Image (tube, rainbow, N blue to C red):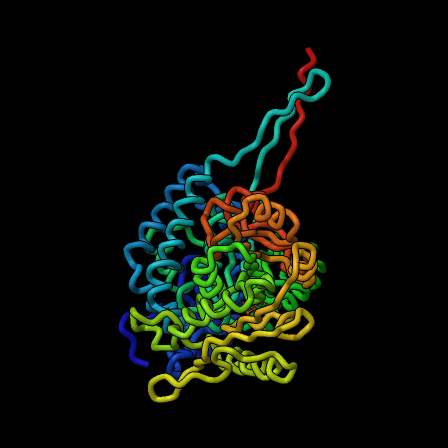
Length: 488
Ligand code: NAD
């Protein structure tokens, strides 16, 4: 299709060069708003992954990258951040045509956050270091904090560049090298990032991009003995597979997986703020958010009044062209996701939940595109499929609770534990609930807040390891203890 900005190269980025895949195979990437083919993308197979790993290994062991001081690594990451900021419009456009994310989100939130992350981790490059330890006897004991080696990053399609950067920026800051595989649904911005790395002079082999499917490219990465760590974000069932395969070569693994997060409204909440938060919690990025507040737990005594407020607001949200700056709700990312979300809407109806908003496909423009109406179900029980399984789309399930005990039991009655929201004016209740919830992040009187400095990650089947903040640095480093005999 014709595009407003030049597309990045449809090749693999290995050892600082753009190369064709050895098999010459390509696959299509599709614009979900129009169903047009945007372009063809290189498919990396085993030999290409091996090439990328060899290049990353060479860069890590004795290439120019390995000889940089921590301070100079930081300077390079600052340069990447600045270069991204000078290409915000292009990055935002590519993200939006690739996955249907409203341009208002990709331009004002995702891309600036990506640049901020590179700046943030640039600052850590020379600040996360070893220590001296007062051991018994006349010995000097100190630690070195060393990079892990070659890091393989495998990422999903919902925040393509942002979630890739959660991994790539701390990995590079700590001196690792990276072989990155974006989702086959959203490769464009990762390829653009490779162009930026080339532009700022990142040493060859430090960052490599291999595009392709999970089954072919991802599997080759998991099997490759030259990769020391896999940093994965994706679905829980894929996460289980990643762990199994990575175990065969005992790779280190961190997993950011799915969620079914409760967004909780107590009877004393500020209903206007809570309604706004509930809508942002489920309809931001069309609900394709791992931490989406997809279970809305409303205190029974407040149910009717709150639902009315919620619907008043939610009715104003309509699907539209994601490239229009006024659009707040775009198409789902791909055909499979579209069918999956519609099937869940069908399941909710069959299970006896009541549709109070949406509940169908949405018609936008000429009828093409994977558009679904923002959908709210009421009278959902926590046992229904729409309350238990991750839909990963704009479908909210409203569930009632009686009191705090009932609330905590229902909120935690899920295999997931990624995030939660609590809306109340009562400070004691807010902190009590936050402590009782089994979730990696709890938002009180707000939802979907992120900052490069604040850790994010899952409890239970939402994964393990933390991203963002200084906590992420742990998993991109290893500690060496050195003993020196000081006895004269
Ligand atoms: P997915 O699990 O299908 O794919 C994620 C990545 O894994 C893709 O790059 C894919 O190509 C790759 N992959 C798939 N099969 C593979 C295999 N056999 N071997 C190696 N790699 C493989 O997930 P998705 O559909 O792209 O994304 C949606 C899921 O991601 C949702 O479950 C969502 O909750 C989760 N997610 C979690 C977070 C978080 O931070 N916890 C953030 C965003 C998305």
